[in-house]
Image 1: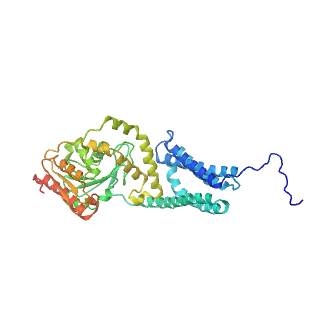
Image 2: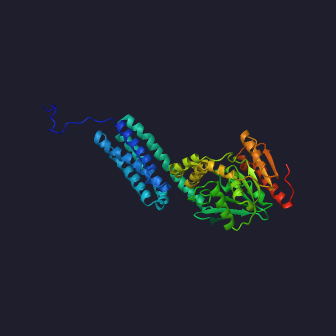
Image 3: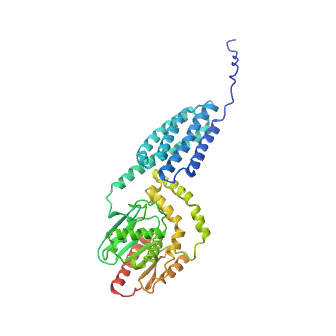
Length: 435
């Protein structure tokens, strides 16, 4: 009789236990879906703090579900999942409610706390989760969280080191943000260098010093890049050229200028010349992105306007990865630089259209450079057309270098520097450019 099964009290019949693997999969998937829905929710502003907060709140829901569902439907209650749920949820709510003031302190707190939680969850998963499928679903997630913690710590420390370095030049207010401007050398005309898409003034380190030996040269960082602050306005060629004009005026840099633009920077130089023709003495277009060849349709414009909010959210979402150190490997060390680069490419069509507004440079000296390596025949033909903007122009194909190398390797930088100084010499002597 001692071994005879005891009858269960009325109302306490056992319920079937759900597979732990299914509970883990449903919980984590629900967290991902919730995070995605919150990111695009209209009540969440497309700022870094808010988007990060939305992501954390969504993921917190997933961990909370894991704690609740495992206790309700399985015999392997994972109540410890409420700890990461609370940490992520509280952090997310603070970011959503308070915003930016919480973001920077949290960048220091989050990585070590999250890493400690991950270590604890690894141990508990191995101990408490008997389901093999449940463990192998949790292990990759915990590994990603561990890598994110280490990357976040590295990014936070490295960003602090970067911020401690002395800034060349100065920050100048151009309206709702400040831009970094640095000028060296002496003499006129002043040369203004425009780096390509996603690049910063520091990457002109081979060109600017060579030009400064013979004339004054100014470099600057576009909004959200390098030392410059992020902008709240749409950053197409029209706005970028307006900000540059204000920057030079407020910085006490008299014109007219020799504009030298690489890649997308050439579009901005062309747009500047179209808008401020009296402030341009000459130009160098360094393997420039070709301007548009036809007018932009109203349907395209409406489509771009309609998708701007979603584009802002996606750009901000991608820029959040900079907090984990991921984009530092791509020379985009901060969320602002990632977002500004994404937006720059997103505005590429509008910028190409605005650059096409320049129809004539009269007899102002113009050098057009084309990189020989990886040359696109269509781009080379477009560069020939650009050279026809002025009656005093030359088009040079630079052998032994590619598009990026036009400013970052010795051969390309030397060709670019020579072209700039040739324009300066033409202006000083009144002599036409020579091949």
